[in-house]
Image (cartoon, rainbow, N blue to C red; front, side):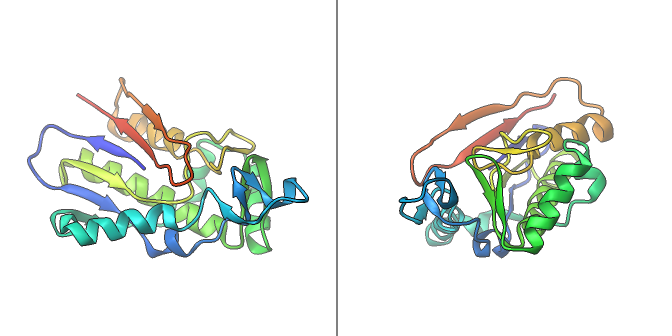
Length: 203
């Protein structure tokens, strides 16, 4: 999840969300461990479950906050955007696994069928959120998405994160908007239903 901030506008907070984030199945496992890594492990209580986003979205609906948010439509990130933070070999591996039944892509990181399509939508949505803030369409933006994307490395995933959305966002912020000073504040809650929040400020 992300926050972006623009103090030049009094417009609404944007919300980037897609039903694809709720429908995606990353794989089985128990809490932090993918099922394939430990033979005798329970397989039905994995950390990166659809409930990580559906519960938050449902709460926005129940409290009426959803009506106060400006919807930001996601889009598919391009190869060039993904390659700004990752190698061609890694994106090719994600594509191959996504076309099949998925697999392990790093420590505590696995993907399921169709993962790359969902990842592209999440990254593209994040970039749309950045654009909306920088162009003054919204004051700030909240991206409610899966899979998380803060810890992935150039050639592998790590800790549930498959691609590094933050590096991709920072690269765009620098190249398109000329930002020089970017703060990423990482608040991690590694409980079963934990969420991640990120803050990017600019002046």
